[in-house]
Amino acid sequence: MAVSPIKLLPRVGNKLKSGIVSFWGRGGTNEFYPGGADDQRRFGRAKLAKDIAEIMIDHRQRMMLGDSRYIYQAFSTVSGAVDQKANYVYGNAWRLQSLSKDKAFVEAVEKDFEQIDRLLDTRGNGFSFRKSAWIGSKTLDVDGDYFIILSENKETGFPKLQFLEAHRISSVNMNGETVIQEGTYAGRRIFNGVIVNDYMEPIAYRVADDSMKRGYQDVPANGVIHVNDFKWFSQCRGQPTVAAAILDWYDLAETRDAEKVSQKVNSALALIESNESGRMDMGNSVVNPMPGSDGRLQTQLMDSGLIRYIKNGGSLTAHSSARPSDQWLNFTHLVESSAFYAMGWRREMLDSSKVGGAGVRGFAADVNKSITTRCEVLHMAMQRAALYIIAKRAKQGVYTLPEDWYRITFTKPAQFTVDEGRMRKADIEDLRAGLITEDAIVEARGMNYSDILHKLAVNAKMRQEIAAEYGIDESQLGILTKPGDIPVQVESEDDDDEEENQTNNNNEN
Image (cartoon, rainbow, N blue to C red; front, top):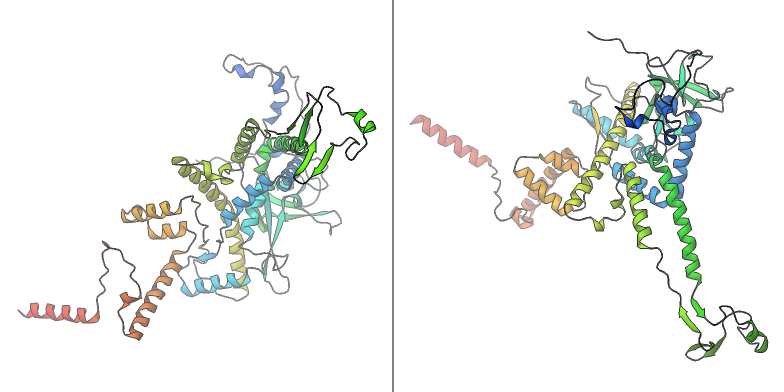
């Protein structure tokens, strides 16, 4: 028997609260869970036992967004890692592929998407639908989520997509309240611009709109694609991966600034003079005024250099510094590594020279899992947008929709590898052992298997035609096989006729 879903949101109204004996409430015992004892280090943390949507109120979401954007813009290590991850996620892929059985439709829709790729964005042809995968990956790391409004040209009906960043969706004019008092969604709860029903399902999004007198408009959820990678069931908004280590990045920024000051001080010190007084010789500058007697080093120009005069018992040595120390470098490396893990990335991507052996394979596997996970998030959003575009183009009469028109996908980016030669050798061995298929190998390299087969067929046909044109054997154009390979036997029409005659003779006998 199916159970009716539970209404997760509390009723609106005043609630009586009993007195609090401890941070966690009355009664109970600490014997089963000793960590439950009152501790000042836990002061106020019982407030975390709520839905994430209620904890991350509007101004805290904006605070987290501002911190993440600042760290991305100001910290070169972070911006480099985020951009590098986006490069691998995009990988010059994300070309639409139709899986329909209607060949004419497949050809028409794929060709149409190539032609309108830079016409879909409301901001103009400077933005590509395919390249939105790169920007989308970066935005998920820095902003936590973004939105796509499904729109159209009112005059022509041409489909349009409007990409909105995280700050555009917020609880405008709510002043900290979470219950809408008027309008279409009166009585509904709103969390950071996401209007939800009793079961926390988004039913509308509040978009900041200065053209409206009230400063916003509520857009129904069926016209918006909310791109996010939730980590909690009670989330309404995404959380930037950069924010998980925001304090670490701030600490690193402070320590690096301090270390830079030390480096500047050390670079300004060239020589160290030791004398009896420990001070600059002021008397000599009065008795013997000469260039350099104004507090600067006393020197005499010679053909081969300078002479420095020092009192008996004094010394002059070159200043040297061992900063930054190995301990400081190791500490920053440790903090960066943990911060990169929180971003779903590996610090070794900055310098993989220290990773070797089995560590390389484990490191590459982690990176590919992160890329695959991000691609799955983007794929769901781009697939829904693509289906909207296909339906709109069909309505314009560009093509007719078959029954399976909705079966689409996108080309995938190539897998990350640090040893391409070893990977290719392993693929060939797995293919011969029957552990993998040809299309899986091709797709892992960011290519389309069907395109490869067509290209191979075209090249094979071209070789045959050129060999026939010049009256030479095809092998003279180049030998692709290696010793030990089994040659492919191609039956000719003469062989078929001979086999048929032999069969007829056997039947007569």
